[in-house]
Length: 398
Ligand SMILES: Cc1cc2nc3c(=O)[nH]c(=O)nc-3n(C[C@H](O)[C@H](O)[C@H](O)COP(=O)(O)OP(=O)(O)OC[C@H]3O[C@@H](n4cnc5c(N)ncnc54)[C@H](O)[C@@H]3O)c2cc1C
Image 1 (cartoon, rainbow, N blue to C red):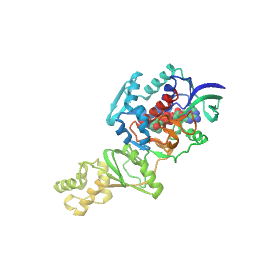
Image 2 (cartoon, helix red, strand yellow):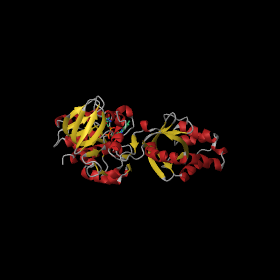
Image 3 (cartoon, rainbow, N blue to C red):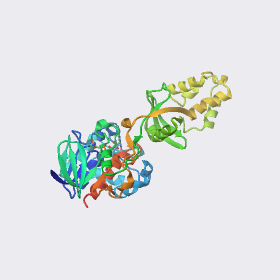
Image 4 (spheres, rainbow, N blue to C red):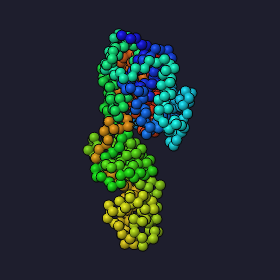
């Protein structure tokens, strides 16, 4: 049975960073079930990898969907700016895009994977690919890691197996099973940051709106959205999908109210309509503001495809209301396998957030998406994975 100071399970951003930092004082083994490192990382950001979000700590925390406050103690030790500097220091050229999102200049996620791989090699981390951890046992002060290929013994164990979204990348939720074996509680798992399927098919597939406001009860989010063949998607939809999931679970239905023109008030649009050439069709008025397909759809669905001069006051109000309060009934959310991130996970009440160490099993650390913490889209989730991996790796040196 081979002996290591530290074993890290999983080579996502959390596991690779943990292994690199842990190797400062330790002989480390990184075990990955795939034939290459960072398979999920390679598809992030549409293959471009939105590596980090460079918001300052207070603003960053606001983008964490659950357990945001617990993350303060992690960011106090390693902030997004520290992580940015780290990548620059290992030779990765980075660039900032809108909303503080950081990407490699190469626009290729492989740049990040290769840079981390190089650091793992420089740090003499042993890397076992194509090896699946199937069981973990705690024996006095040692941990025994059992794989499909053999058994290992280590003093400290870092579990970085990810969530259960996109299982084809290797993140099949194995860590939840290991955590349960070690007496940890797993909060309910659910799809977070996912597309929505509408009750009715809207004839708008492929249409993108750059700036809308979407409301569900008291929750209001702003950004771009996309109509798909069976529903709606895009950043603003991902952002509200968690609330939609909870509402549908409780009330079996959810209705989004979309302001298609948040920069124009209702009054402004009514005035504009009243001043518009009344000999023209109403569709021509709407097309000034919205794409043709959407304008035609709104006019058709209200059945008021007439000249403005022939429209009643009520119908004028109705068309403006349909722009300011476009209602979309949602049937269901995408499932957990297709969601960008897994909601829920290892309950943080049993984790020391200063070290990521289990409070129940000394020398066992949980990091990354496996934990009950996640952010919205925009680089927050890889930042969470890297930061928790960093903290656990550092702590394992003590
Ligand atoms: C399509 C898509 C795009 C995304 N884009 C972005 C983005 O641009 N920016 C962003 O911040 N976030 C993005 N995310 C989310 C982000 O990828 C994850 O939150 C992040 O990868 C989690 O990192 P992790 O290290 O915790 O786990 P993972 O990256 O999931 O890595 C876990 C690793 O553990 C391995 N493993 C699991 N079980 C075992 C086992 N039993 N034995 C051995 N190995 C095992 C897996 O094979 C896997 O390689 C995206 C997610 C998806 C699905």
